[in-house]
Amino acid sequence: MIARPGMSKYLHVFAIGIQNTLVYRVNFLFRAMFGLVPLMGTLYVWRTIYAGKAPGSLIGDYTLQGMISYYLLVTIVDALTAVAEDDWQIAADIKEGAISQFLLKPMDYLTYRLCLYFSGRTVYTAVAILPVALFTLYLRDSFVSPSSVGTAMLFTASVVQAALLQFFLAYTMALLAFWVLDVSTFIFIQFAFEYICSGHLFPLDILPPAVARALQLTPYPYLCYFPAAVYLGRIQGGELMLGFAIQSAWVVAGYGLARWVWARGIRRYSAAGG
Image (cartoon, rainbow, N blue to C red):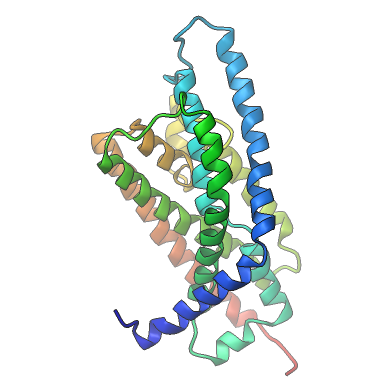
């Protein structure tokens, strides 16, 4: 299949991104390995909590096996979708005037950054798959397999949408560099909300129902919790369809917001020099 002229330049950006990111493959390997340390600590805490209860006890409808599977899945989803340095690089491009070249060439900056994001995730996933696979193999007695091929496909679809939503949120936050000199505070606030409300710390369905329902209206649960819940079969039928509809709606809204903020920001942008 021959790529259309308009797409070939972005395929080239993706290929260049792969080559540049491969330079840091050893760093990615160590990051993936040490990224399992917090997971081991979290699993130890939950094992201790369940050890103080009767065998087969549930915490928010989760057995110990289900809880371990949930955190492993969150780690996998995070490895596949997390934004690494993209937001900082976008903010730096704005502050240093590097985006001027995209205003003079027929290349869309959002698509350019999206290609670099996916190239970075591709390399990181390829490097991280070994330590994560070994850790999952070690916990194979506690890890739940998908109930069907259909469930695995739905999980994959939810992860792809989670990656797009993750990128659009980070991209939009980085565009605040059009208005402020330092976006780090906003990025850290965004990260804090994401870490708490996306299901990194705990499954969101162990929260009080009213709180869980309120969070479902925000984009954060669809970054980690929703893909994990789809894999574990905790969301079924109409609730599953509604979840995908909301996740898709947030992806579209995130894209629209990113375009709108860029259009507003570029009006304020000025750069000098050659």
